[in-house]
Structure formats: structure tokens, C-alpha cells
Amino acid sequence: MLAVVADGDAAAAERLRGRGLLVNVIDRPELCDFTLPAIIDRDPVLIAIGTGGASAGLAAALRQRLEPLLPASLGKLASALLAARDGLRSRLPDLDVRRRTIGSLLAAGGPLDPLAEHADPAAAIATAEAAPSRIERIAIASADPDALTLRAARLLGLADRLHIEGAVPPTILDRTRADAQRIAGAPPRVPAPGLTLHLIWNPE
Image (spheres, rainbow, N blue to C red):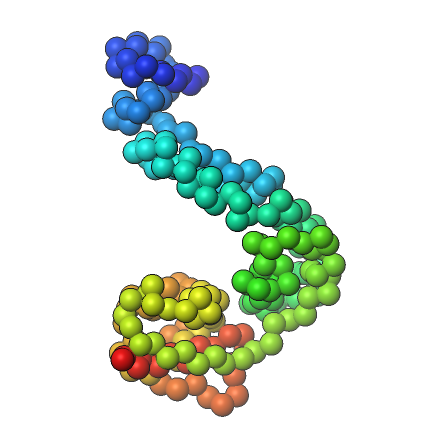
């Protein structure tokens, strides 16, 4: 069903295609029906890196750089989360509470940070409690998302709602969750459920 032409022969590719095969011509993306990504395998976690045929070398280089960042226990973590799914639903029936709790577990530096090794992830999941409601204040000094601190970027991706003071640039707001609620003005003193961010535009 599939054919790979290693020598770039366009005529051979057409003959194979005429027989009903899908064809990949190495280093000739314009002649390809499909491309082959570089793969990082942490079964059941699978990460594919593709360039649309632009450069297999680039995909391979990215895989070589990224693979050491992913611990061998990542697959074990995924399997533990699957095994705990029914138990989490029972203990935390509210979907939003459950999502926030899992997000807190998997956050950078959290008990189940995916980029850290975990000898017994099932134990951390079994003892997980609902993530507490809180308000975090972030002063935004630049419209460049690359100027965000790692902490600020992480909180933007986790927040349930944003209270926005000033003209916080869209380039920063684009880093937030798509379903995060956006509210003009300062937040109330008592936090709403989940994570609330108080964003203040404070350019230098």
C-alpha cells in the first residue's frame, strides 16, 4: 500500500502511484503523498515531529534535542492516569474541579510534572486533593510573549479566569486558555473557584 523511493526518481514514483500505492520520495516533498515524522516513543505516549517534507534532518535534530527531556517514566505516568480515571471521577465528580486538580498535579514543579521522573505516580494521584481556589497577580510590562517569566507563562495557560486592568496586549492574552473567562477590572477579594489571574498592564 505504501512505497518509498530512495533515489528521487520521479518516473518510478509515478509508476508506483499508477498502481494505486501512496508514495514518499525522499527529499522531494512535491512528489510525496505522505511524509514520515521523527518519533519519540514513551508508550503509550507518542510524539511525532514533522516538517511537511521540508527537512527530514530538521525533524531528526528536533527529536534528538527533545527526547532527553522526556523521562523514561512518562509512559508509566500516562498509564497511571488512565488507571485512576474512574477513581478520580468518583472522588471529584465536578468536571472543572477534576480538570483543575489534574492540571495542578501535572504543572511544572508539581507532584506529577511530566518532565520529571516518578517512581510511583499512582500514589500521588491517589492522594490528590482538589486544587485550592486562589488569585495570582501578574504585572505585564511588554507586549512580547517571550518576555514573560516561566511562572507567568505557566499561570496564563492554567487560569480559569482573567481580571484585566489596562490595555493588556492581545499577544499576551493569546497565551491563555481558550475557554478562560475574561473580566475587565480588579478581582474580588474572595477568589472564585479555581485559578484567577489579575493581569495589570504596567509597561516599562
